[in-house]
Length: 493
Image 1: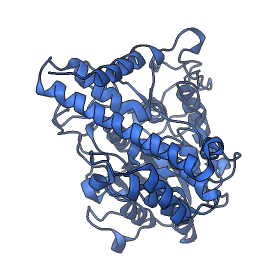
Image 2: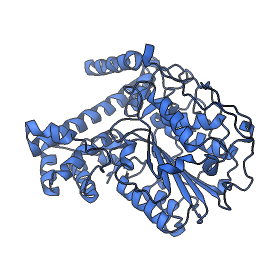
Image 3: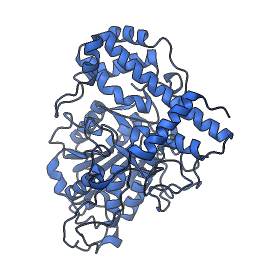
């Protein structure tokens, strides 16, 4: 097989990244979280799934917003969460699962029909309800499910959050993201303002008592910052603040890493942190705040170059409540004792969520037999992903220069608003300019979502659709025809 010089350079660069730049050493190593030194009170999960402080019911929505084997970790996260809920006493009728379901029996999966979320973990796929899979994993269905609107659901099981005024709702979302946006395996993507409007509408309907939202995605803080008001009885935590990436974990090259036959990350750092904490604690007595503090320390990794700032938004006072009210508890943990240092083993490395696909392609290339079709395929996948990244990066940079000049372009695109302000003033403008860009330059895709802040800043500067179209046409003479193109994937807005 012929490996072109550019391919060799790119692959060698990635191998350097995997081998060196993600290592933790000395005082920058991962630190174990400290916990309160007290005993949990004994108690078991309710048989009926109620929260214990009322006659209400627990409802849960789980959603993995990606597809593709290189995104294995998102569906693994969601499946793990389901098993945690079942052990906590919740019924399937009160758990709604969104996942593309292309991982368990994917030809790349070394254990067909099995999904794991940690190196020595058990199968978390067995028994998971297939409520909304494949092309039914859409923004519209997600919103309809939250609102309990059965007539608006298209496809899937038709199951929705049919909650009442005394009920508790838990929503967990794991995927790629960018400033003000969350990815989906279908198009369009989920925009922050639309989600907030749905949550406001849910509150106005009087169909829940309290709602907790856990969000795993890059720049996930931007989904709530400056947008989620108090007074909705909603408490949210995010894997990162509004400006930074979140991180994959249990990836090839890490310690602990996946079993040698795996060529992908098994989980996400924030997600693994809250679930592995929940796996071993009596959640009747552990509060949302206690878990937040534990997850915050573990996800920070003692080094924010390779970790992220876990954030909390909304009705912060709700974090005094016990997790049991939302996700139940495993009776096996009734007598669990808090200790100063818990025993969870933390990874020695971390992978930026946006680089996890490259890690998969690289590991696949590295392990494949020389001259084999598999090695050629891995090289092709890697180069296509790198080509797309280069194209999007260059296009956005050039558009900034065309609109604002060489000196001002970079400054405008990189501007970050003060904390507490939403990403953009006019969300319709943002969506319009995203679609205008993609019509000329191709899809942003999971990687290109990182540029959503730049497009928001173009909106905030008062640039019109016509001006954006002209600049995009100059920056992109043709739309790339690769697998990441809008010609293949559609438009994200």
